Length: 308
Image 1 (cartoon, rainbow, N blue to C red):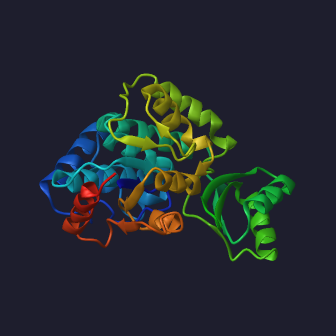
Image 2 (cartoon, helix red, strand yellow; image 1 turned 60 degrees about the vertical axis):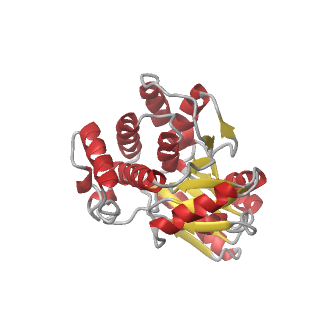
């Protein structure tokens, strides 16, 4: 049996998500390291006001993921796999030993700045629940204005990205055809679609100056739903995941097929736990948030003792 640590993406952020981490020396050291790399106190980024900006959201998700994992693994076994949805790929790469944490902080800050600058207003993402993928793709093909498929999160949950006006029109048609939900997400940029191709190219140029290692823990890509073992392929995956469709449904299935039976969602929130539930119907899904640290470590120890 195997363990997967899963890191959430933008939309999972919560005010106070860094201040709410355990009061522990490991956490403090991680916060200090991130602040030094950034040149500002990261604890100033998790207010409701600060989280209105893409840069702050993505930095908080990175720091929360890395800090909590370092504490979890201090007295627990290493996971077999790591994966992250969108920005969650960055803490996953750090935990896998492929990307230096300080480099990740600087790259994520740039990522957020590039995304926000490209579309400062009038664009975002919308979740559609209850329609088949083929029907949503048809609605997108018939839409007027820039709007694209962005995420395949689960069998009945898709996300589109584009202009507010174009998304609203698609959402209205989706509701008319029986979608149980068609609602804008707390994301102010059109992620995972061609609209962000140019910022992705700029981010790739920054990545070219950063050293990456081959992952020491198996890394699953949320865009290809496959393991990445070479440093250069990982560089491409991280730089360009902001303009590629995320397929978490396929990733969860891949993880299960590879023997993962313990899925632990790192903070904040429980979004990925819900999305992965169907794929892991015979496994154990648990989130850091709301679960005792020693319980998570015990689950990992038990999973590590099971025959492969």
